[in-house]
Image (cartoon, rainbow, N blue to C red; front, top):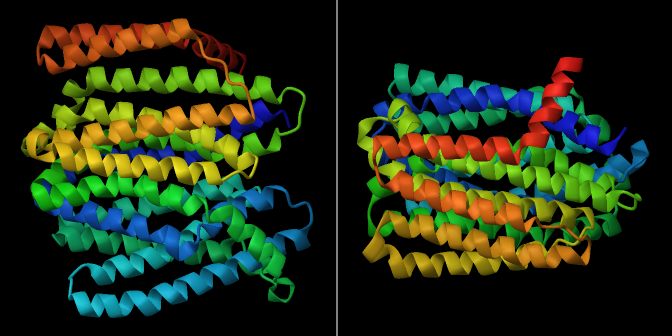
Length: 464
């Protein structure tokens, strides 16, 4: 299959499987922000952030290794060796975490620690299942897996929060039950035990898998630190209300990140499959230029229309969160493009660069946060995140030239910077006329920059 067509097809399948539940979850924000106080929402977001921090250590990121190594497997026995060896490593990590996590839980006497411990273990299991589905080429089942995760959790959230009024406990219980039931369903649905053969577990394979995944742990953890440190500092310096406001403001960048995530899951596969081909460099550059234009148009469009959208979706008690959205959208853009570079690094199995870049940025994020938190409040968290993501973007952009020469259009860069300044100034002027002008600029930018993409999609739709 032509790799460009494969990339588009897989992105479409993943998007179809996820976008409906993501949108429903997004549009349920009015329900969440009405029934949960800013403090309660802050506690829930804080717990999930801590869980996200712990998962890479428990799983040793074997999900990343499984996916990358399965792409190279041609025979059933090779797949069994990769999956079985990975499972042994993960079971060891989960056992170690359980032995440590339960005593810590009992010692802290913290109400939500039990939820967090169970959620972390189930997160590791579901991560392994999704990685296997992608690695063996079952993109359709991977999309269905994520669809069920999203839809069931949404249903349980509404049931536990709106009907039973369980608050934070309800949201956490919904997340745990969803992970458990969907994982069990898919273990039996695709008969995963067919890929387990412990007689062929290989020590050299274990070493190769760990060598690949270990450098990704500081990368994954550092990304989490960039997000988690914001919550920790806000929680301790400004309280749970500030954490809740920040969490709501991050919902919109997370939506953009979700859109990028549809592409990224396919990109990691395509970037590996195209290696060594004659048109590899052209393929990388074509995808790179299209991605940048589309994602930046999304940043400017969401920033321009945000004052209107925010007041429709969000309870008035959270209106202050609107101020931080444009900064976080821009930070998410740089994180997404850094992820594109990361796809090239993983294709070449050079994961060391990813860990060093994000670790440096995480330290920078914490430092800026601590320096600015007293004077600028929640703005400090948003600005420090932007600075950290921009540093990762610059460093990886420099390092990726070792493998591929990515071209930059200077004219487009100048237009993008000018448009950003104009839209941000109009946004913070808080004027209705300025908002209309801002929306016009964003639409004009999107149309001009993505003209080729729009025409291509339009022609394909006409032919269909």
